[in-house]
Length: 164
Image (cartoon, rainbow, N blue to C red; front, side):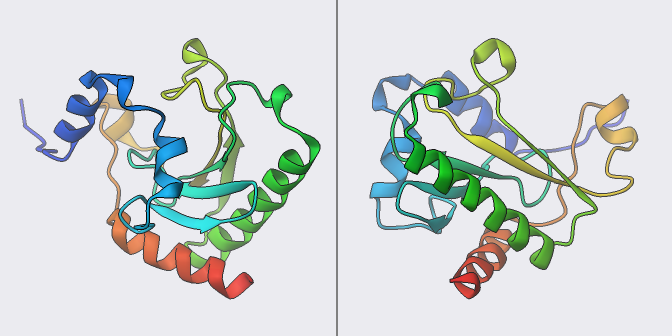
């Protein structure tokens, strides 16, 4: 058997075990001053865009309303409208910067549906490329990401600023 080393995954494993009493990261992170460290690439009035720290693909972002609710039915119309506009901006930015062949857009409502953070609603945009599903995830349950998060953050943050 061959070994594929992925030491950065230990952070994910340890974070998953941490006590969640520290509060919601989607509520805390936008109030902190370091957007780069917190992977926030864009802030609007009612929502923000954040890179997924444990992405399925390069450029995997989340659109997150500032209000802490678990169900999109609890969001007001202003927030929902801005979320949709921000999703559209994110599509433009991803197409301009990393040129995916397609995008998966959606949300996981509840832990059973796959939500890692199930008490704060958020939407996922996952860039996809022809051939991005290969033997690694299928046979070895391993995903290869070709760009560091910090480099992706720089590209996306710059592109969002250019849209304004």
